[in-house]
Length: 501
Image 1 (cartoon, rainbow, N blue to C red):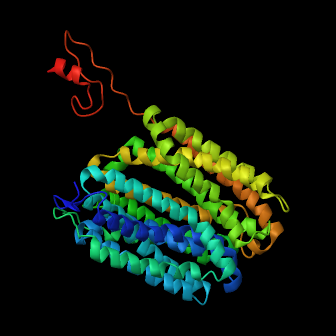
Image 2 (tube, rainbow, N blue to C red; image 1 turned 60 degrees about the vertical axis):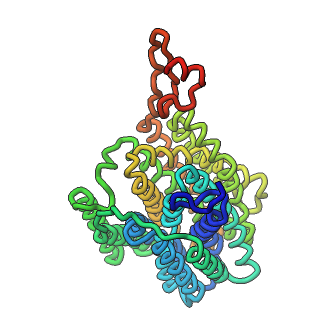
Image 3 (cartoon, rainbow, N blue to C red; image 1 turned 60 degrees about the horizontal axis):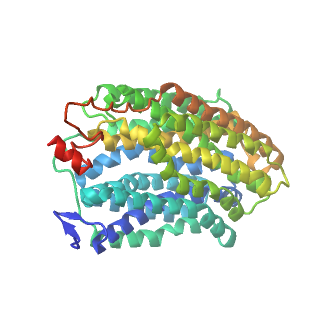
């Protein structure tokens, strides 16, 4: 079939199909790229804007705060008001916020602009997947989403290298201006080639109150925890936002339980497998958020790496993810996810503990690379079965919201860990400029993150259950059936089908 549209939907391999893929990959790629390029620029941003460690934490957390808080709401917005419209709004919003980031005269303006970027990312990231799901015909959707995953993975891989290069040869401001030409391409391609779609039967009410409570709850607790590093918990500017944040999160839980159309259906969390998968998600991504925040700073402050060298140092993790995640997913389908979700975090924890070996003057190949490889192997074995378990535990009608919840949990865990772990490790103020102080704090932080991630492996071993395999049917006299978990007789040898008939 060569037509671009079949039954109102896009066909894989046609010109229209390639344009839809290009638009959605480039759009979501902006958000993925920005999530990796900023980390390597943090020491340079801190030096130029005179920011302390708390300011650098907020450069990351301002983005993750709005992204984690609003990503659940954005899927409902697309269903109601049009997926293409919401996606385009997110792309334009993200580009404008990127210009504000590039023009920021101080760290306060940069943090505000980063929070605005997070709003755009919350609109465009789930919107890109929703467009693929709604525009491609059923038999082409898996291939389209697989292509999207692979190409956005390339954006993740390129991010640290590109960010480090731009910082070294130009300015950290270029990493934000890079989004502008990408946004122009995405808008032009989407307007011309991507049709609009919406759920005409959508009757749910948009839970703006729930979304607002998550912003206040996560924002208040994060602000208090980051501030505690410099002022102590007794200071009003610390305990007051902490109290407000905790109360807002408690109110969110009450609203989810009793509201007519809550942001998250409470029935999801009564599914043991879903709750367990999200607990493991929280521990794994908390550890990752802390490591990626602190490692690039450590490499530049303690080992004297350039921004480019620090960005390339963690590239093996992304390459291992791209190479092994698919195989890990297939293995989990065959043997069940429990083993990989239990062992993978323990391997990740071992990689974090290997980072304790790194000291001033150590060579990359003998000290940094082994730790990075072990961390990447653990991550590659964990993420695919973890995500599949979280999504597969929910009913098909809740697949979209289950994906949103899992994504929000991962972002919120990173947000919290970036605030908590440096505080627990004794890192605050200008410690990132002092090689000795930062080295000591980094080692304590790696011990803490290793313990958090290892706890995720223990949780998986205790709570995750492999799906039950269907028992083979009892043989009947002169009758046979195909023992496949699928439609009746699907894929059955012809001879058996004839006998069964």
